[in-house]
View 1 (tube, rainbow, N blue to C red):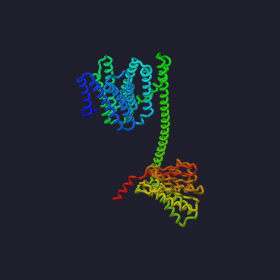
View 2: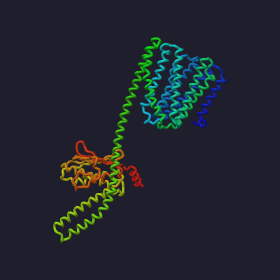
View 3: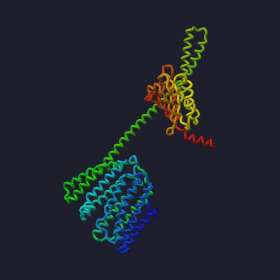
View 4: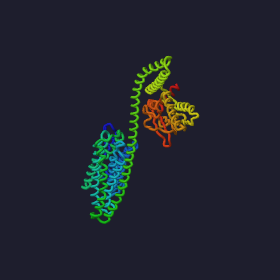
Length: 583
């Protein structure tokens, strides 16, 4: 942090200097007490306001982090305000036990919880059940320790010596726990998060040391409010105020978990479970070996049962969230596997088509030359009048098979042809409507009905209209052939917008597809030999891929097949075209 470049640092440093000067200039008495109480209270209010402001400017877990720090400061303010009220307003010494003592003890718990939330980690690394509930469990156990050891001597059977002893021991342990958590955070983080945690660590250590100095001076009857013993405490309060102000300007970005952070994450639930398991031991000790008066023993046993119920509920909720998270992870994994298999099949199909396209282009070129010669000589022979009838029939068969081979070569060339045609904004609905009209004419008298449901005002796609029309017409013809095999039926063509794509479905109630997973494989066909090479759907697949879309096939449970085509909407092309029109 750049202390020298920030005016707030000099303001806080000036507050410390003023307070230090007052301890020298103002003699022991009422005004020294007012200054000694009011300045730390005002600085604690500044720290709270800055932390609360930081929470309002933050989002997500970072907001919760600053809110917990602000809550800790608020409890601190209430305790400091109580002392100010007794000494400055009522003009008397605070009692040995006040209502603010529990708040002073509890004000460190939100600090520990804030760090325990692991706010520096991204959401996918810092799950709710790892951070929040482990922190809740540890905080509840810490509150139980205070209620178990301190509260009985304060509210059940008052014992000032036992109260002071147990309070001091637990408060020391709480400060040590806060220091340990902050030290672990410094060890596990880097960058601005490490700076923030480091300053919190140093300020908390200074706060604890200054508190011990004050307590020791009080025990030795050398302390009065506003004396020089307050100076370390003032520095600690100013440090927290400085952290609150400067912390809002730091770039507290998410950090990926390191090996140290993973160790922290693994340690946290183990410690939480250890404390939960230790809870019944306290109840057993209170029931069997506690030598206190019966009121204290009964209070501690009942308290243990109450906290066991609370922790049991917390553990149950945590386990429930763990189970839900596990099921969610399984579902996500299953979706990932299915998507991976789909992409793998898509890649394999694409590689097949690319390899076959190269092979087909070369083969078609090599076959065309001898095929042309065969057809030419066959025509010459068929025109020769000296040939016998049997020879002429044989020549006719040769020409017929050569022409069939020529058609196959043409299909191969069409299959291997790259899409070098001009691309424009294509109205898919008009192409679908035209292909359906062509097939409707051919379906007359064949007991076949073609229906269309085309959504209105659909955006256009960027592509080659002729190539797309070839796809739509082939899919319609395939459905018609399936319906003819069954003796009739209906074809339903549906076009609609679906999440940045145009979704086109060809739904028939024909015989269905024997092997839906293979229909786009080259040369796969269920037609009789000689009726087609089985390249039509493969070519359709390649065309849709060229347009950045997807095509799939499946059978309907009630019978028939569904071919689905998804084409990306050309939003940017449409905007460009509209801009050109406007000009």
